[in-house]
Length: 396
Image: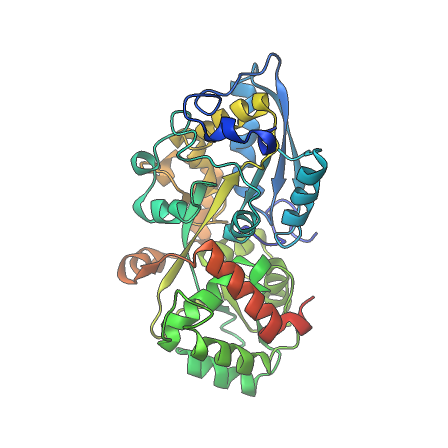
């Protein structure tokens, strides 16, 4: 989710040349050099992930003052960041140390060979994924091909979120939703998948809802899905660049139904952007398409910073820091690591989830199949096809 233009604090609004050294076991890769003095770490937040992990990140310099002096945060949209990193790498002037974001930016970076290989290269410096991650979070982590470490996880969606006072006949299947949009033009929409967690979860969940040929192959197995999305698009006036705008328009009455996920359902209601009374609905044939947020290190960081960044990743995956990722339901549940109950979370998190969470989520998570998203290569292809054939001309 956190690949979008919302976060809870601000709703609207080197290694490149390491070459053989990085690939030679036992040389630099095993034990990067610790800095002589504390370093400043520059973190780029792609679409809102910072809302979940700012406290754990800021805890690091406090706990390791000899390693890092402070954290500096900036934001960037997923579709634009890879070209910026590539330009900096080509010029030998990288000013980004850590990228936090979803599969969209991770996939694009893998495609363009932007990231440092973390595993197996630095296995001795990082926790063993099989030992620390929840089972579905481990499956998400493995999609990163060793170039990103999962830091938060959630079952995601796709869910429909709607206002019950405005939607009396709630669609219960993909076919009923299409019929509803024809009768209620421009009252339903979703964000551009390349920069919206619910948007991409929606297009990846549809092949299961529609019984398409191969849900894992958008190029050869999504004939029903692409045809459906094009027909659905005839009743959608535009596609926003992130999920935040969809929540705003549901809240202000411009839309009656939007695509959502567990976290996007809970957190905007906590914030008051969407009324507390909003409801969620799954469609016939529903499968969860799980999601995660990752930590990535761009090629080109200095040796000293790399040592700090690997230590920072270890820090972020401890149960004590993972407990902060419950947040206010933003990526519900949140923790990717095992053995992090809600009782470990800050009191504010426990209160928000008690008031705005949905008791039915536990049963929905237990009773419905869980699928991993597309591989990075296939996801890039799906975004391209959607931009070219479905919504590119109507995106804002």
